[in-house]
Every structure is written in structure tokens, then in C-alpha cells.
Image (cartoon, rainbow, N blue to C red; front, side, top):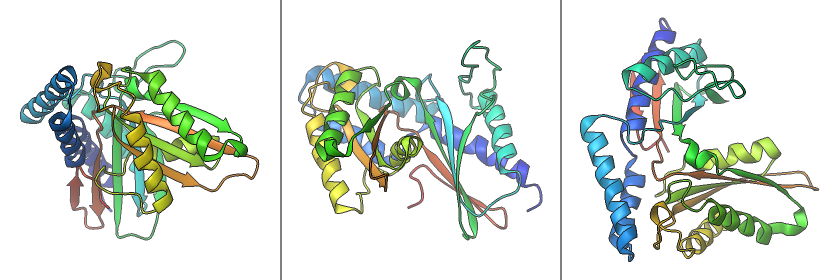
Length: 290
């Protein structure tokens, strides 16, 4: 495709603007339901403030949160030439145009290049297929929730009971730090690195789409109910809504291992997707394509 780098650059800028200034309908709907059902006056006030913030950001086309996050991209479908270069250019442009806060720094010196770029940034995951389009999904994820991520190498004997305990302990220890109500991504199995990727990918599934695996769907429902009984509540100030949902993904693992990763997502669960067709036309979605 002629000019594919420029096309991807423009798509990236548009994607990031959509992602950081508005919430997907499933997340917004869950927040509205939580505000309506919350029994704590303090918790209801926090949820009402969150909803007012989201409405103002959408109306003014400004970022929902001052932490516009570290950017993770998920690529699927058809391979597109120079896609990574286009994403990098678009990310740099979006930093000044949207704008995004320049969050990417050197891990030791903390030097900030000022455009969200650097070695290993952004993180890009690929899953190519024979589709007629290239799908680009971005997840801007703030540090408040990312800092609460946990990876545990459980023993197989700890089993399902150990998995549940890890998720519960992680959310309780996190308290109000990840800006609840959160969405909890859980990755079970694979290798250590794969488990964490599964946990992050789980966060991409909309809250109104159930898990197709009945056993995992039951686990998600049980964990959500248990976590909302902790009383942590919105922003950690008490209430019945600590999590908006739990999302679980799994992969086969070694007979001697049980890796489990827990990745928390703050209430500002931002994501956006674009499908780039062969003819260069583009379709955007805040909900994702499912």
C-alpha cells in the first residue's frame, strides 16, 4: 500500500485521541450502573464525580486523566509494511497534538525524551492472519493501576484455590492506589511472561461480553462478587463497588508450573481500535471489534 507509513501515523494519532478523551460504552455503562446501585454516600459521590469528569473530557476533547499512560498496541490481521515506524511517528505527534503527557523515561537516569518514545517503547504485540484488514488496538494504561500488577509462580497443588487467593490478596493490598472501581485482568498458565500478557489482553474484552469458557465465566463471576464484598469501594473510600468486572484468560502450561498474573485497570479503562482495509479506508471503534 502506497504511503502506508503516513497512513498508520495518522491512524495512530486518531486512535490515541479517541482512546484518551472518551470511554468505551461498556465501561461507561458499568460506571453508571455502579453509581445508581452504590449504597455508600461517599462512594456514590466519587462515582458521580468520575462520570462528570468523563462527560467534560468528551465534551471538550481533552484527556480523561492527566496520566495518559504507557501505550501498548495489539496488532492483528494482515501485515502492513512499516507499521511500527508509523506507530512511533503517530505516537510522537499525538504527544503534542492531543496532547499526551510525556510519560516514557529511562528506567535508571529517568531522562525524559519528551515524546513518549525510547528503547522498547511503545510495546507492540503481533498476531498476524490472512484477514483483508490490519487491526490496530491501543491500550493507554496509567501507572497507578500498572504498579499494582502481580506475577506469582504458584505450584500446581495450590490450584484454583490458590488462584482465587492471589486475586483477592492483590486487590485488597492495592486498596485505593489503582483508582477503583477497577477491572481485574487475570492470566493463568503459559510461561511467566505469557501469563502477564494474558492478563493484559483479558482487559481488552468488553464488560458486556462474557467469557466463552463456562468454567472461566463462573470464575470471573465468583471473583467479582467476592471482590465487591471487600468494601474498598470507589477510590478506596468505601462502598460496594470495588471492581467493575473480572476478566480471565488461560493457556496450557508446564506440568510443574502454575503461573498466575493479575493486572489491574483503573476506572479509566481506555482502549480504541482501528481497522485499515487494503484500499486504505479506516474504521474506528472505542468498543473494539468482536
